[in-house]
Length: 210
Image 1: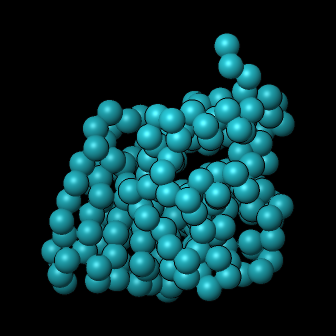
Image 2: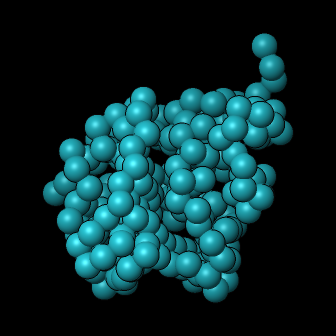
């Protein structure tokens, strides 16, 4: 069995076609998944599977995170809403990609996980330098005060894409989010018009609303 290392994980994701974009590969290299898992799971940090982070939540499978980030196409300078901060791993990678001209707002419903995410992301200085901001709240309602967003991404599955997210998206913006066991990509083409793509065969924890 292959040794669980960051290098092996990234090589596998590239070889299997999940990681393609240089800036996303760079984020996977720079932002260490080991910094975002519970102490007891450190040895499994580079396994290509989800890991429990408490409160019936997980740090997502690297394959899924890679796939969704590639679909999202985050760019330098963008303002992105990340629904369900969880461990903070995806938020930190997004912060790395958008850089100092960008901004990531992550919403987390569970106070203990909000604190966990904030502590983890702070290891990279993204909270301190103002690139990432973690807020406690009901992610299904989005975050009105910082809208509109260039992109919105979610880590938990819902029955449908919330209208609030659609309203808070810039014209020409993109949402990547799980619905049921599929990943949905919505591109905003008009006031309330969206082009949709669907990718099947994924597993997610449910999006819990207040």
